[in-house]
Amino acid sequence: MRTRRSIPRIAVAFATVATISTLPVAAQDAAMPASGLQAEFIRDIEDLEEKYLGLADAMTGKYDWRPGEGVRSVGEVFMHVAGANLFLPSMAGVQPPEELQGLEPGQVFERLGAMEEETDETAIKDALREGFAYAKDAVAAVSDEELDGPTNVFGQETTNRAALTLLVTHMHEHLGQAIAYARTNGVVPPWSAGEGG
Image 1 (spheres, helix red, strand yellow):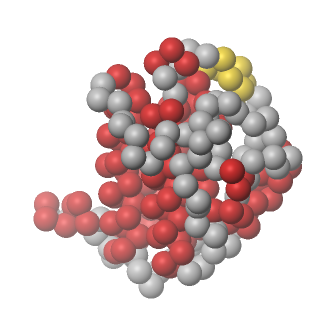
Image 2: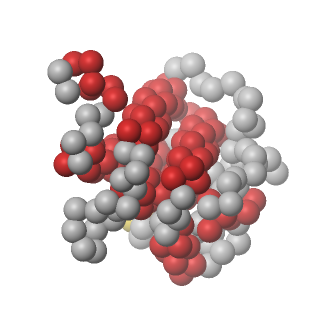
């Protein structure tokens, strides 16, 4: 069974669902699909990755800021996204990294919380990069024929296509949160800086 590559130490703190999926993640240098849903998702993920990493650099020194008690900090939002990018593809039948296999369902959320405790900004940026790279490879590993295959996402019967859609919409949801955090801290998102902020 192939896995993409070893993941950074912080990502090992994260787990996947107990039901091990069967599709291997594409090799790091495997060709990405040129058309179809996977290609569109991968292009979207690449755009999201650029925006997240741009915000991660722009928010340097502010990773511990949070809008209120009980709400994720900047760094926790970034780590939440990195962890989800490793976890959510398993719901579409993609095998997780070897380091994350075989854990019980209850360990998933426990490890999610542990992952979000990382405070080192370099480690957080590395985890973001790894999570996005893994997500792109995972999307490429699901063939067109497998998109309509049945799966279970948080107790709901659905398709692998819906699981991949959740992966991408989750990234968009938290990008909006990260943008709001940046703006509240007087940080203009880098892609908006040349357009009047």
